[in-house]
Length: 178
Image (tube, rainbow, N blue to C red; front, side, top):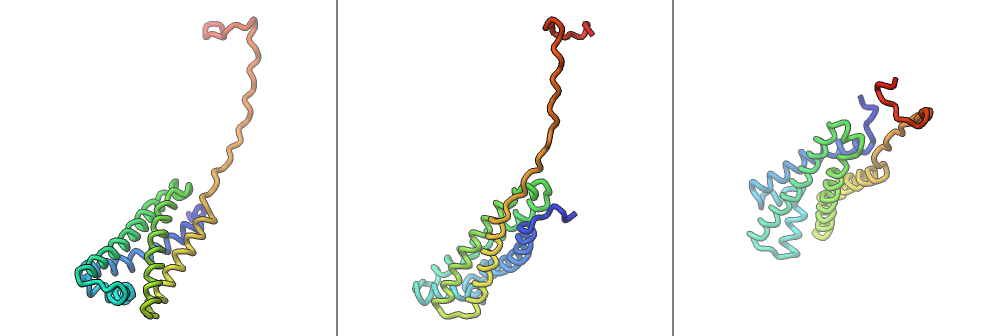
């Protein structure tokens, strides 16, 4: 059953099992209570950076929080699409699910990198460790997907077609001439 699974597929599935529940919970907390959800540990660096360095007012901070939640939900959606495509063996073997994984990895890496930079600017060490770990997970998976690539299609060896002997007097062979 697991003979046709690639390392990139298993790695992507494991990443999806972490990011889907973790980032969905953070995004829903931000959507329910934007300011309170933004000041929780996974997003506190972004909140402190927005308030201290960009001097955003209340409503602008709420809009930025919703944008962060939308970005996280987009990553979650692409991981879910990846898992759905991974269940189809033909798509999995051809590497057809790698596009959804690539988009999730790219957007997730961008969010984690920006959050990590913001955490380092405000001096939030716990958030810095969290975002650096997530970024390393995403970049490691991207490297595995790029290096591994889809499996090559098996070569089919065909026997050469035997040439038919020429017909006598080059006449077409008709059914009634047999």
